Length: 374
Image (cartoon, rainbow, N blue to C red; front, side):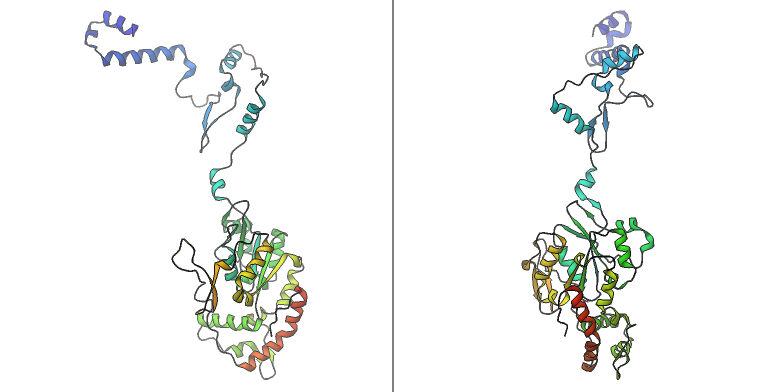
């Protein structure tokens, strides 16, 4: 203000300055004097200035960067002016303050990871079998808050293996550290290379196999294919090389899948039996809560999915999930689930039962459980 008064006495046009003009002029002259006296305190630091900025933005919050010039700016300037290296000072702060400094220097994880988790390779995979009830198991177990699952079949280990594990990881949902990542692709169980490939990814992967009476499974498989290909040959023509002699065509995929003992032998070369859990497709219909309880135990999860989550849909002949509180209707599986099977000649069914019997008995012995498919 003193500069302004002197200015108004010596310049002829200064009598026009009144009120607000005098205040603004005072501020401007004060700013010029401040900049002249303190050139190091410029508003914006020049790019390329080696002196670190004390206040930085890391995208989430402003963090105080710990540097000698920030903690002791005057001492740092004096040392620089004298051409001496800044001497570190003894840290006489209280232990709590030192701990706080150490914590501040630790990089914080991105907030998106804290909120949404990371994409991880699966901890557990439903590897089979087709038309056994794999979709039901996946939909029922994903009710559990500690389970996240890929919605579609990835077919990584049988069709897309050359794309690499990072491509596979990208298909997985984001999970928190405490959650299990899962996927299901039923064709894995009958693909020869799959056990070795999953073992190469992780020998700790838990495997779930949903099995069903192989004769009923084959008829269900044929029914599904027929719905997509109406001109398909009859079931008997595909299942038998010579029905009158009872010679079954083992090359037909619908028949081959039901040879569970042969496929399991391949898996046991790479995984111990204790790492494979078998779900009964029949009990999954009659007692879904009981089967899901065993699945949760196998995965090391608390039993949260219970009988309160299910009701039996008599129209579909299949259990459905009860209405969630946030939804106006119950959740049943798609129209293809519970589809009425094609009627097959009784003699053909008995011939297939005779064919599968020795394979079933061997399978019961291998897994230590009698599924009673008779």
